[in-house]
Length: 66
Image 1 (cartoon, rainbow, N blue to C red):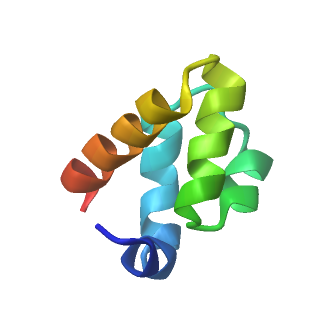
Image 2 (cartoon, rainbow, N blue to C red):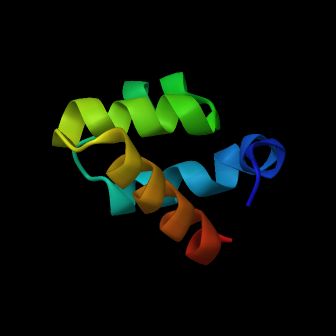
Image 3 (cartoon, rainbow, N blue to C red):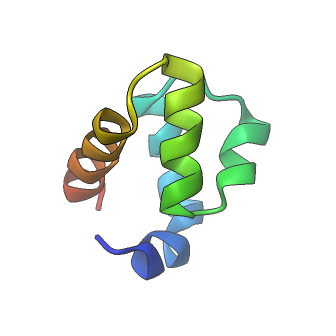
């Protein structure tokens, strides 16, 4: 799923973000607004993982979330 599709489907997918990454607050989910790089950054911040691991998590999630 590319960034344009993620942005377009963000309202539908935002609930799934909270299921996948439960440490996110509603405000943080809104802040991401479907931007893949923001999501990766938030995962790094909240979970203390490296960028490549956060990107892998987003990629794996995006492939199963739609």
